[in-house]
Image 1 (cartoon, helix red, strand yellow):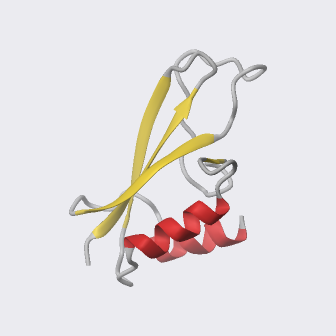
Image 2: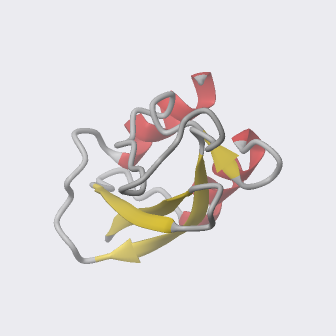
Length: 101
């Protein structure tokens, strides 16, 4: 089963965006639909999450003002990939974190 890439972004109040993705190993053969269903059930207002709570890298634009800019990130998508994993945990481990966050 291919690895899974999780794509998300930070958007500041000026609508500037910074995109990031994380690749999880998928030795358990987790299906995209299962992962996306879990993610969707945990999002704030159907699209936002706190990267730190999900143990994902926080990214911000070069100019950010935390007095007015949100600290949450926007979920974009998940996809199968042949890219090497760069996350320290598997997709099943990530799902456990999301479930309890």
